[in-house]
Image (cartoon, rainbow, N blue to C red; front, side, top):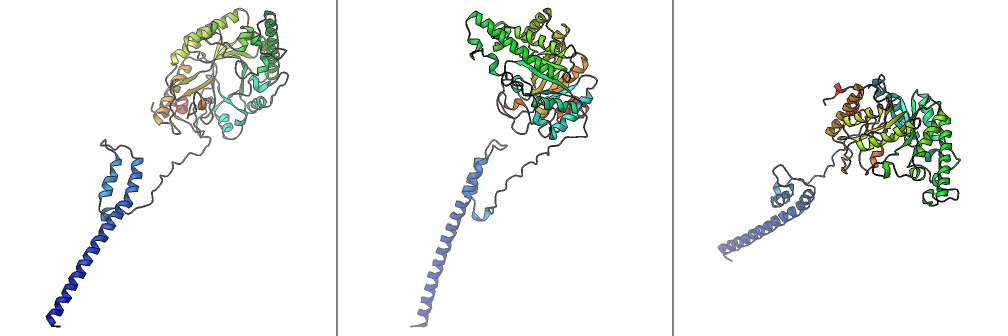
Length: 441
């Protein structure tokens, strides 16, 4: 073979090899680009699910198209997603270096709180000892707790509250001798075990009325005799007025069977069993509403004219951030004072929500809401101090936000109605009541 032909063959082979390498490199580049695009796209899609609108009015959901079209060299390396660290929760504790609400108002009125027996130890007990000087049973002194069946009295839970109070120099309020709720059904059964309200025979209805009033008289005398030396303030009847019911009286079994005689019977029995040293109250909610206030007024005045021993009116005062107005509350207190009656706030709390609001702030209540609550509490307590003697006691229906009936009424949600949060720490509302200078409200 001639030398020039040999070099021609070698050159041709080299060209072929070079072209083959170019083809292979191009194929590899295309394959790598496709793989990179397919790797990034699922991550971008996942991000777009939780994306929120950005400041320009677009959405982070547009990110996938940009990421998918980027060249492999411009794509960031994938890194494990990081969960945000949870916000540390405060440690529950009783603050010993803050003022006492009870001491702050020592010259104005006692400060109380509603409790359950299981709250008489631990942090709740320590908070009670520091902040209040009066207790009331949330449930342990209601009829179903004390006399679950006729002739059977269970005193343990009520006794625990009385003992704790006595051991710590606190007063006790009794709540409540008579109520349409949490009263055992046996009260309203005739001697044959039939519901008294179903009886149509007039003679038998009269016999049933006498039987029910006898049961009530026995119960009231027994309970008052037991606690008269330790308890001086008594809710005798609770929530007996309802303007929407016939005659403005709550259509309970008590009323349907006895009329208003059960109210008179309860007050007379309590006075006779407890003597003149105890104070007897009719207790109700919504007393700031004119129609309910006026009906209670009419009832009490009628009773007083008959010599029924009513000493005062208990105003539950379950309020919210907007209503009722403090002026409406003061108007009610003043109206009953005109009858010579004492006024006490018996079940104070402040919901974060208005009556028809079914929303939920969630676990962390916004600070501006807590400040609005503080301003309302300040307005109320300033008014009470300015009208000294108009109210003789203030009792909260609880002590800290970790235990409140409002958490499940009217729906289950976060509530924070008191001066102390669920960790037992002072809230803006606390400072609004004891030292408003600590707040900018």
